[in-house]
Length: 201
Image (cartoon, rainbow, N blue to C red; front, top):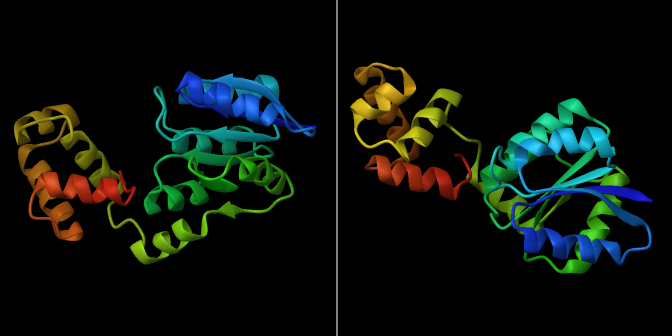
């Protein structure tokens, strides 16, 4: 039997996925969690062969959980199952050792097949998303620039950003200017939008 861990913060979707997989003769769901920061602990206890992870979860994103799980339990194959088909997310997932990246609007029959393929050592990626990731290119932002831009989503002024990030006003301004230049954005708001659309935040 293929042992599967489900990580999805919406209980109804998590239950539906568990029910669907329960219909398969060779798949058993051994753990279900609703938070990203519960993934590694649950996997350590249940020892799944495959972990199906949503991206947007409280506590920790599915992408960060995938990286942590790959380090803690390298034998466990990770498949990202998400609503957000952003090229940057796909690149990050693959770089962090994910075996697959599927969109939630894919036919249900493809999910069990993807789990079997992941266990067999294959990589599973939506072809359209793979093409989009190639055309979007690499994330041009450094880790610090991503941190500044992410903080800019919730912090208002330069002064507030500087306090939140423990940086000087001038350093924050320089980072924002560099970010906007790299993204071809005319404003901080536009830079955030572009980075989010491409999955770079």
